[in-house]
Structures are given as structure tokens and as C-alpha cells.
Length: 208
Image (cartoon, rainbow, N blue to C red):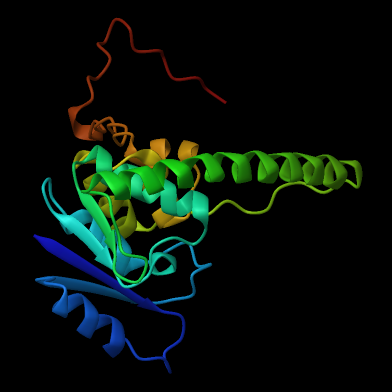
């Protein structure tokens, strides 16, 4: 099954061009987002990833409709491949179900690794400079109950942690914290059910 995903950045832009192209390509189901490419949380994309099953192919109109950056694009496609879900981009004519498409993404992967190293070096340098000025990291992001449920569903379906984190905009350590089962709350014993001390062990009242 071909599963389509379309995205525009603002509400005044139309999704019609992408929808029409995806339906013409044979997509039976199309998920959409109205969100900037820099936005980490995209519910439409998360639902598309959740919907896709082994043997399906996720189709986008253009590569930048899926990935916020080259590393994010690579991680997303690798996550799909790990679940045996193909990826296809109409404008670039890339299809990972073909040998040519796989080769292109191997090259993209090498470029993404290079970019990741550069970003890591710059980030570490920035953190060192910030700490020297007495500044530390900002407030961590949290997931609400609905997004926590979605993260667990994607993880159960085999989506890689990297793709889930990129989709929901959280760190890997945060993801594992949300995936962990909630600790059991010990049952409270009612006062009427608590054992009363016997006459022998009961302390005598103290006179004041």
C-alpha cells in the first residue's frame, strides 16, 4: 500500500498540489501537517509512521516535506527500512524499493554523518562557552498522555528510537523514560483494617 504524507508551513498555503500528486501516484491514504519544517512535533507525520506497515511505501511530494534536515531525513528513512517500509519522493524520483534509490540514500547517509560531526563539534564548543558564562541547558520538553501513547505505539511497531525522538522532539533518554512502565503504587491500608496492639503491648497512658 502507498501511504502519502504532505506538509505545508503555514495555514495560508494549500495542500491541494501535494494531495493531487500523491493520489495520482496511487496513495490510498494521505496524512497532512500544517507546520514549519523546523518544528519537531508533527502529528500528521507521527500518524503516517504509525499507520505504515511492513510492505507499505511512504510517499512524499518532495524530500523536504519529510525531513527537517538531512540527518533527520536519513534517520526517518532508516527507521522505515528497519520496519520493511519503503520510501518514495516524487519530485526527486527516489524510491528506496529500487537498487538506485538505495544507492542514493547510502550517499545521503555519508553526507549526514559528516554534517552530524560538524554539528556536534559546534554544539560542544557552544556548551563550553555557555558554561564558562554560567549558563546551562534550558527546560526539558515533556510529552502529554496522547504523545506518550503514540511513542509507545511507534516503539511497539518497530520504529527506531531515533525516528521517534526526531518526530516528537525529545531526547533518547527522555523517550526511554516515557517508555518505562509506571511504578506500581502500593495499596494503602485502611485505618479500620490495621491490626490493633494487644493489651500486653499497648503502652499505658501518660498522665500530664
